[in-house]
Image (cartoon, rainbow, N blue to C red; front, side, top):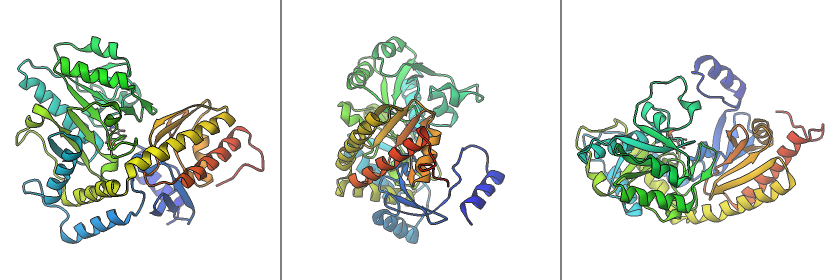
Length: 406
Ligand SMILES: Cc1ncc(COP(=O)(O)O)c(C=O)c1O
C-alpha cells in the first residue's frame, strides 16, 4: 500500500474523529520516521508526547519481545510481577503510596475523579465537586470531558456529569473563591498541554497546594502529557516544589505501548476497596514490561536532564528564530514541551514543515507544538529550526523558489 491508498481507505472506513495528514509511516528509528514512500521525517510530534525514547528503542523492543514470548495477559484476578514492580518504581520515585493501572490518560483521570469522589464521601460530608482550570484538557470520556473546561470539546455531548467547577488558570484568588463545602478536590495540569502549552506559575501551584492542605482538599495533578521526563524533571510538579495527593500518567509511560496510571498518597491511597474500580487490560504484563524498560532507560541514560538542557536549547533557538520571523509572536514551554504562537494560521506551516521533512503539529489554530522524543540531540534541534525557518519563509513570502510541492 502507498500513503494515498491508505488515506482513501481510512476516509472510507474510519469514523471521522481525526483530521489526518495524507501520509502513513512504515518504520521509525530514534527521532526519525520513514513513510511508505521511503521519505524520512524528523519527528517533533512523537505520537503527541508519547514515544519518549524515540522509535524502535532497543530496550523497549527487547522488553516487548521478551514479554510477548512469555506471557501477554492474565487478568488482575492474579498477581502480576511486572505490575507490582512498576508500581514500586513509581511509588519510589514520587513519594506517593499506591498505583492503579489502566490504558490511557482519560482512564487515569476517570480513576482519579472516582477516587476523589469516594474520598469526599468518606470524609462524612458528601463532598463531590472538583475545581478544574479553564483551558484544561483531561480526556474524552464523559467524566474526563466534564473536567475538560473547554466548551469546544464538550459541545454536543451534554448533559455531562455534574460536579466540576471551572476557574481561570494561574489565578489563585479565583480558585480560593470557588472552594465551597461541596468541593473535595482540585485537578490541574502543571503545564496545560492541549490548552496551548501554558506553564503554571510557581506561586500559583504552591498556593493551590496550600489551599488544598488548609481546606482539606485533594490536589490531583494531571501529568498525562507533562510526566515521564517531558518537562526536564521526571514529573513536572517537581519544578514547583509541591507534591500532589493524586497523580495521573499515560502517554510517555509506555513509550508507545498503551498504559495509564493513577497514583495516590496519604489516606486517599487507602480509599478504593475490591470492586470499586478496575480495568481488564490495565497493567497487563506486556504494558508493564514496556513501561519498566522506558523508565529504567530514562534513568540510566540521564534523559530527564537531557530534556532540560536540549529543551532550553530548543527554546533559545526558537526565540532567535522569532527575532527574524515577526509572525512568531510568542515562544514558551518547559523542557521538551514547547509552543510557538503565530500571528497566522499554523496549519500551512505544519504542512510546509512536513513537505520539508519535519513533523510538528498545531495544538491551537495559531500555535505550533514541539514535543520531540527525549533522546534528541542539539543537532536535531538545529535541523528542526532550519526546516521551520524555511517553512515560515515559504508560507509568509511564497515564491517559486521556496514552494515545495508534496
Ligand atoms: C493532560 C492530559 N490529560 C489527559 C489526556 C487524555 O489522554 P488520552 O488521550 O490517553 O486519553 C491528555 C491527552 O492529550 C492530556 O494531554
